[in-house]
Length: 204
Image (cartoon, rainbow, N blue to C red; front, top):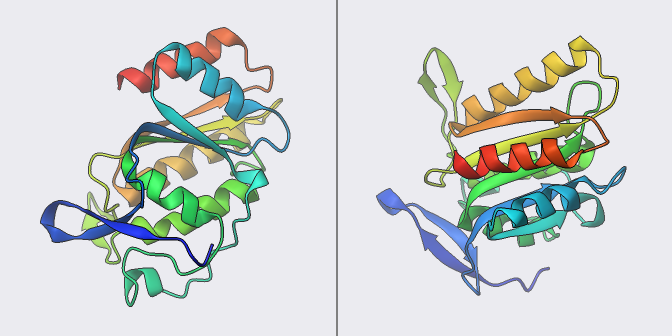
């Protein structure tokens, strides 16, 4: 991935974020961990029925390394992660979308390691400086009007696991300063539930 070429995507206020050479933009980007089940694919089908333009990636099949907290993306290479792996494919797509949907198995009330790496590496698209808002420290994203949704999948989850998953991702949205919601489904992924989520996300 060291030969990956960027174009600038200029945001309001003159801040620059990088877009892929083709400059493709999508209404929605789905990034899923399908290591246990084909959940991302099932959700993609539900959205396609609603006519939503989207692109989907399976995080568990990509080479995505953990964030090293080198701070280059907030300094020397502002807005660009310097780690040469498959996250370089995802970041431009995230910049160009209106809605980002992450799909993950619920692991002890949190997301899987594959989705956690994606979320951590998205810091390259965030404001490097924190600010106080509503009594909390928030960072914000350098992407106008991004809608962020998380779909967790798990069977026989305890109330503590469900509460932790919902709370942690509400805090993520607060820190990112974005709109969105969190959903939890069981692994059967019945069509009625998927279609309901697809409609709710598509119309928000």
